[in-house]
Amino acid sequence: MDIVNYVKSFPLRTFEKNEVLFTPNVSADTVLIIRQGVVKVLFVTNKGDERLMWLAGRYDVAPIEDVLRPVSSPNYLYMAFSRGSGYVVDKRDLLSKANKNTALALQLARGLSEQHDDLLRHITTIQQTTLRQKILHLLQHICQKFSGAELVALHENGLNLTHQAIADMIDASREAVSIEMKRLQSEGVLEYSRTSFTVNVLLASKKIGLA
Image 1: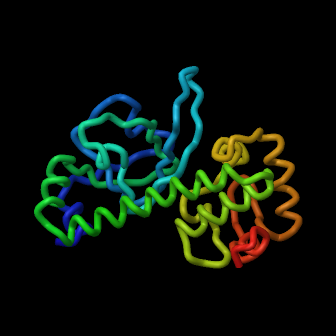
Image 2: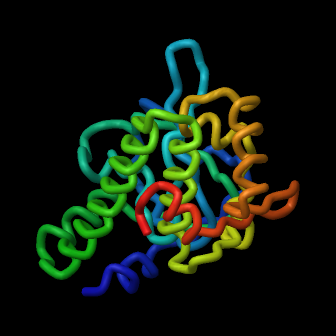
């Protein structure tokens, strides 16, 4: 059984930018397997502040923690970063089918492993010692996740990142990020405006020693 064909047997849901898809500590009987668009995953502090943790894309599972720990509720707030759609999959049926079908289980495990790796790369990003390194690691990671090209137009993938979004993901101030982004733009690493955001992945990788 192929996981793509399996999820296509479930209803397709569309969502709008900034629409809340799953809220923390509220259990659901279904998960959303993203078909198109981008979903942002936010950690909500006790004070109600929201921190952008990572971005989910095509065929990622939301909420991932509901699959890893099916009896729990989501730990994070899942909100649409762009317009998109996804398959509303019955959680129990998904886990039951995976237990009975080795191929489906392997595909699901591979997908969950990739999402886990995304989280680990995000941790690596915020552990960098300088703001410049944090921004470069973050952009290189996002570009690799959503495209394999050396020059990536993130806005064409529904990812027109703002300085505030980048600041939230690396736990920095928007003002400091804006200054460093202007420097990176002058060096040819990226080109951005209100409607576009393009990254030279090869140059970014060279600056952090990954190329």
